[in-house]
Image (cartoon, rainbow, N blue to C red; front, side, top):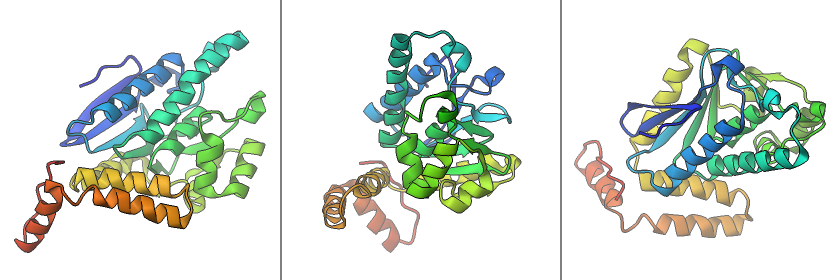
Length: 263
């Protein structure tokens, strides 16, 4: 199992990993080291998923998912140092978005600034009813730069994204769900159980099929319908010669649960 300074990794059930951002003393604020750890974590999964089939990404404690960039670390940074750090955060966002293994965000508390961007980079989100979201960067003289202007707009629409980003206004879990950013809102005590249940359902499906479907949805949403359909068929055809495809059909006909091996 991978080891990180600012992350805690656990495997609570077969084929499922929980990645917990772990700086609870500062509301899991995103510093340079956490950025590096998230890059390495998700890039290593992309290079070699092994038997991993789903990831749940969450924060330590009940207070925050991730409170955003660590402004104490940034105090007094030179322009050059700021830009060097931001390259890490840019790469972090791409590593999360491009991870072939599905990522469920379990937003257990505040997801502000970069924390909201990390959440929006996940494939889908469950949130505690106490969770709060905001992209507050314009109130600090900057703007979202770890995918926020792109991922939020794709989730809630351009006009809503403009309202939220240009005002920096916080919003709650119920609003996030009504607008399409969050899939389900749950009591805080039930959040991880629900996220792990969904992860277990995903992990029980054929992993090649799941990864190809994830990629087809994500890539296809950025293409014309005709090009998206062509991409879908390319993804589909990759599964035809797999053992999992044969096992799925055989198990159905034998009236038993399939045993998928990712081959």
